[in-house]
Amino acid sequence: MTKAEETFTAAGQSLKGAEQSQMFGKPCFKISGKAFCCFFENCMVFKLTGKSHEKALGLRGTKLFDPSGGSRPMKECLQMAVTHGAIWPELAKAAMMYVK
Image (tube, rainbow, N blue to C red; front, top):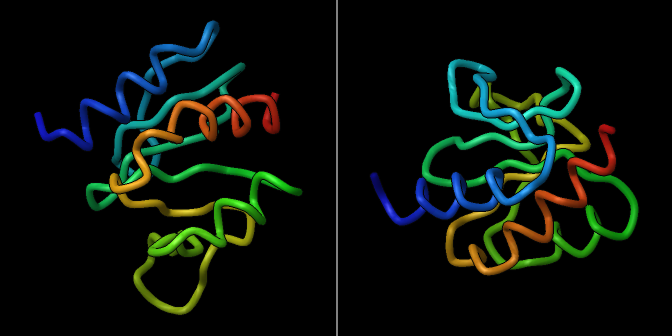
């Protein structure tokens, strides 16, 4: 398991009520059956809105999540590199509260 995978797993498992699952064939965490974060291309993807979304998108290397690899990014989902792994738990919590 890579450092990024360990950081992703730890962030999701730290949240009470979060269920480990799959989304787009990738590991994810859900709350009440709704995905709020996933692991994709050695990055963590968060479903965010408002100030959390704005702040995270402003971090270097963070981009809108586009699982198709084309030009159809998901507006609310952000893909963030492990270089920002220290804030993954905080963003995972914000994402969980958003979809809850």
